[in-house]
Image (cartoon, rainbow, N blue to C red; front, side, top):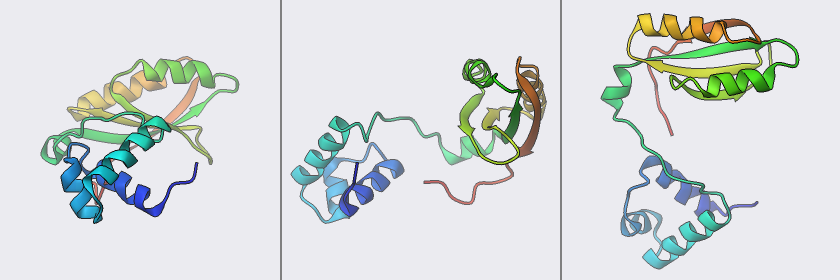
Length: 143
């Protein structure tokens, strides 16, 4: 599905603040409020926008321990591993990637000790061959 440049700008603004009013978004885009509303409705109908979510305050997020956990999966075990990792609430994201690892998870916990427990838990999942973790020190920007 091909999006217009105006749709891409609209989506960028919604990623920044999905609770912004239609009037605020319209002013930033230089469009009418009804045009913005109809574009949003069209993007929802087409499935481009599938929902809205909560973004936590930066101070709260910075106080948490976050890590990218690279995971190597044993052959033919991917589906079972993905199901098991989906059931772990501290695994916020899971990506299938190319390269030396099969998956990259974003783990988010309250303390270094909890991160140690989380990485051990992931490593003990049936079908996980090994893990390597990189703790995120800071986020330079996020969109």
